[in-house]
Image 1: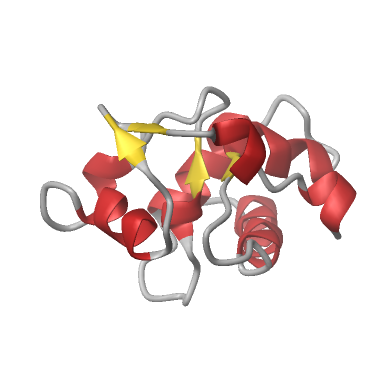
Image 2: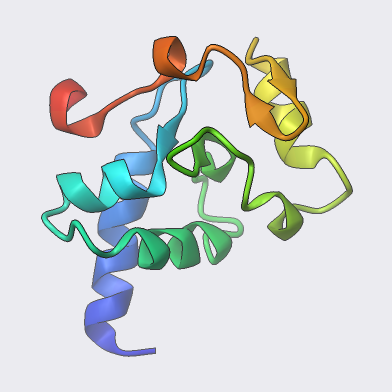
Length: 109
């Protein structure tokens, strides 16, 4: 991986660590906040690579509130379980009341 990609990943992790419990954001919202509007997919790669870095990757979903990254978590429904433990309702892999729970880093940081 290129050094600039690793630097971008660290910036993504810094933003993700600020997402409050019980709230969610999107890959695109993080990319936009970091000034890389077209890099939502790279934000997804960062979340998939976050591993043991104390990053709440389960709080980052796609722009429609779908748990598109759930297959990168151990177990079948770990991402959903982590969200539900924080009071987030998930039905058919989609965050319920997504707009109300959405945390926009451009407005919150």
